[in-house]
Image 1 (cartoon, rainbow over the protein chains, first blue to last red):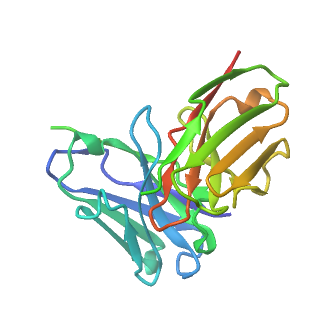
Image 2 (spheres, one colour):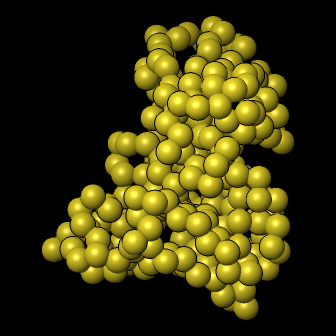
Length: 120
Length: 107
């Protein structure tokens, strides 16, 4: 059974960098046939794709966030990471990590989500 | 970007009703569409992928259809557990995009 779990600070100050970790169990993070993604959801609003990556370092980001997003992976720890720089209140959201199986394009396993609030 | 538009935004229905939610893409996405169910405070759950393929473990009362730019999610007989918000998602190009959601409420 694949499980994903997000972790990181729940409060980030404006202009600083949001940093989240997704720990994957049972999910073969090293397999290059999966993409590992981040999706976010502001309170009461819809879902927004942030970016995806593969274990061999391929990344693809939402163009609206591209200049501020960095994703990386550490297969030895079964973890992948999200960094979002120069955050503002508009970046306040629940951030989900998710698996895109077989590079299919949809998300079959999701983490439970991490609420990140941007506030001074 | 490919824009995804769902209709209606809110749908009121009763237990046992057959309901249909529509998702329209701003350009053709072939059949590269998924549907998710999300309950308040919960994680989105994959229901349908490739427009009409039912995810393992999802009840057969859920079905999807469509191609090109117009897609539908149908629930054949509403159950109490089905009241939630539903999202479509296209994965035709590298920038995945979601619809704005359809909230299914109890009438």
